[in-house]
Length: 388
Image (cartoon, rainbow, N blue to C red; front, side, top):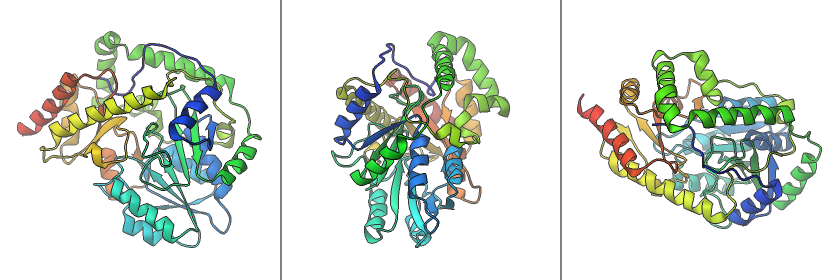
């Protein structure tokens, strides 16, 4: 059962302008800038907002290593706050203690973001206007609270990623939504000075896409690649894992890599109609609810009601309380290949983040997964614990 990649069958190449128009109409905002990568959006914000007297950014350690490296690249000082296991968000009381006169930005990474906690974080902003909030919705494009808000978080900046692991992608690319039009004009002017996207990198990424598309063909995957991935996981071969899951391991970033004007590749699987976005989200929500219904009675798991979280459910995240390694090997032996957590804990001092990073499974919600297959995954997980 492959959940890492999912692709549609047809290719549609359209212009950046048309893709931007789709995003603008969907979110009812023209305050949008395109970038080569989602992380490039973050880099540009930090370069603009971080000052000598306000150089601190507060975030949780559970994210891609590249995000942490970008913060370091801008010479900002990082203050970590651990996540709450049941909200996927910073522990609000700890977050409140870390805010001071040097706080420039709070970066919120959406996992299974509890709606009520997001509103509490927004209320901190109302009481203190000296800092700004960025929300990393890289895995949540399509999530829409209303015409004026993406999530229940009242963020100043929201950035997305459109790399080839997302439900809608252009192989590479990112987009930034800016709340204040004054800051949009500042960022737009600065962006005009950025270097164009590397043609060599485009070729490299497109070649990678072709390889991945080949791997994810059902017949090839089950008869060849499944056993290769299974062997790597069971033997925990790190140097091969780094090739398969590069984002999970440490990635060094440089100004040369990040200074891109925009992704000029155009559309690959990006929707041409807003209805396609809405239908995709509806289908994913339904599949996540089916997972929740079948797993919520299992006391060995922490599961989340999709109706109570601000998440697109790109994959349905389940936290395993105990026997994670044995469960994962059991699933592999039953020919069920599930992705582990997409993020890594970047500071071992924070125990909740460490626990989630090491004990989370991502269950597939893509358009090729069937209800019968979802039921089979759930039954297999439940059967494992019943047999203990």
